[in-house]
Image (tube, rainbow, N blue to C red):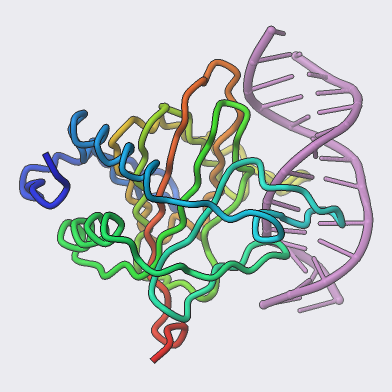
Length: 220
DNA sequence: AGATTTAAATTCC
DNA sequence: AGGAATTTAAATC
């Protein structure tokens, strides 16, 4: 069972919508395939360490509460609160997954950010994937492997304190082993997302978000 | 120029 | 008990 053999025609999507939110969810990889991909990722990926694994928040430096690495086309770098990391070259497995997602979606992803959550204590705070260097017309494809975790989305107006706070309910999803979540425009301009801590989560989760950068970011 | 950004400690259910 | 909300600064766009 390998990724290249997955039949895109048979993928059954679940559509999730709300005000300014447009998601598609599916279990893309059958269990045996997802198990194999996870094992291969664990064997082949190395994560950033040292200064590349730190963020500056409220004037203080912290180690990121998860492991992280980026791969993609030459010339791309990923910036987040204080730190800039280079995109490492594509690996064979990452290219294979990218090609399948390109076939499935009709987009050409040129970058992937990989986050590894060692256990339920690793997490990610509320943020949007709306960097100006990203092609705002392209979706972001989020593939999850390993430990199931809850993904929380909040409307930007439900988040800010004060009188203009609006009561838009959050959207929660359980991201399963082998699942693919498509975040379609304009979702990432309007909704924040996070992966909260979960005491009961013991296992490792790896999440890969495939993105498309604006053409002028790539090295020619 | 004012909104936005990110994680941790603390308080509050 | 464990989650959700609140508070924290300085730099960037």
